[in-house]
Amino acid sequence: MSAIAPPHDLPLRSGPSFAARYVRELSVAAAYLALLALLAILRPDFFRVEFRLTWISAAPVLVAAVGMTLVILAREIDISIGSAFSVCGVVLGLLARAGVPMPIAALLTLAVGALLGAGNGLLVAFVGLPSIVVTLATMVILRQSLN
Image 1 (cartoon, rainbow, N blue to C red):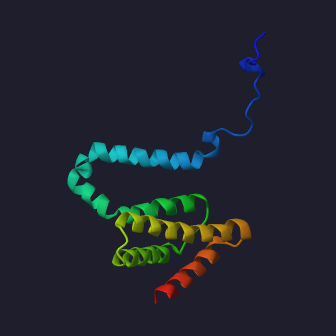
Image 2 (image 1 turned 135 degrees about the horizontal axis):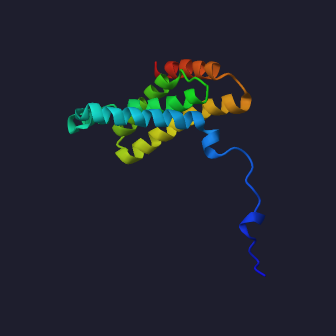
Image 3 (image 1 turned 135 degrees about the vertical axis):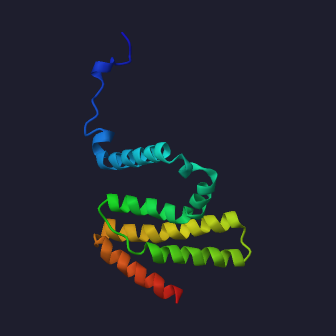
C-alpha cells in the first residue's frame, strides 16, 4: 500500500472560492480591462508614445488613485490622502536637499507614506474608529505640520 492518500481521501477546502470572495473586485478589474481594450480598438492613438509621456508625468496621481480605489472597494473613505501626499513630497524634497541619494530618499519617502497609511489603518481596524473621523483628524494634523 502507498503512504500517499488517493485524491478522494484528501480533505476538502472549505469556504468560498477566490472568485466568489472577490467578485466585486474582479468585476471592476474586468470592466477596466474591457474599457482599455475598447479604447485600443476605437482609438489606437491613445496608446502611442506621446501619450505614454502623460502617463509617466501623472504616475504619482495614478498610484494614489489605485490606492484610493482599494479603499473605496473596502467601503471606507480616506480624505487625508492629499495631506499625506504633500507631506511625502516635502519629505522627499528635504531628503534630496540634504544630499541623500535619490533611490534611498524615494524608499524613505515611501516608508513615510506607508507609516501614515498604516496609522490610519490601525486606528480604523483595531480601535474601531470610523475611517472618515480618523482620516479627517489625520488631514488636519498633517496640514498643521506643513504650516
